[in-house]
Image 1 (tube, each protein chain N blue to C red):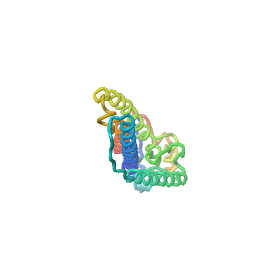
Image 2 (image 1 turned 30 degrees about the vertical axis):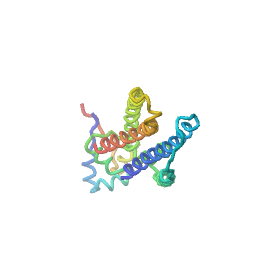
Image 3 (image 1 turned 90 degrees about the vertical axis):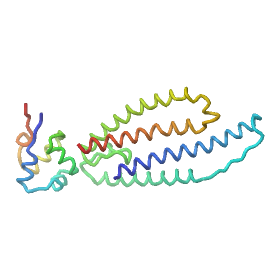
Image 4 (image 1 turned 180 degrees about the vertical axis):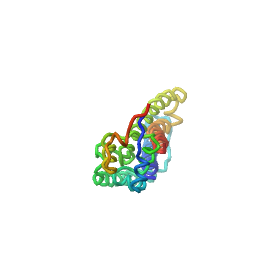
Length: 65
Length: 160
């Protein structure tokens, strides 16, 4: 299962879901699904998120057994 | 909201086309019956409302298509090839994925529904005499049902 730290990092960077969505070019609903873990993003979207938070992808998205 | 609007418009387009074709076929059938001597005369009222509705809906759908294409071209994240009809949401990658899944659901449903509709002709063998509307409206119901299944699937998947 793929888990992510998007919610945690978004709070750290003081961004709303809407602001983050706008920065990476998706809808707010996509951020909601991403944070709930019900949506697995594409590599491009993951890279865009990593770019916003200035962290390597593997530090944001990782597998949990 | 946009999806509801386009699905309703598209459904109305098919229904208005069915009404238009039905009215034409009905009059043609009267002429055919008259020509073959089954009836001595007939009277019909011919209106152009169905045709006008059809033309207006077609124009609105074409305008929507062009507007959406322009909006899509501005959005750098969206691929224009993901968008064909205004019903297709390609605003982001998740919408594209959900659109694909919803189209699959709709396709399966249309296959099953068409099978049932085709079979239903066995139960209405005299449709060409007493139920002239039957073939037009059942044919129109196939895309309408497909659109409704698409809309429901999209909304359910999108809300997850």
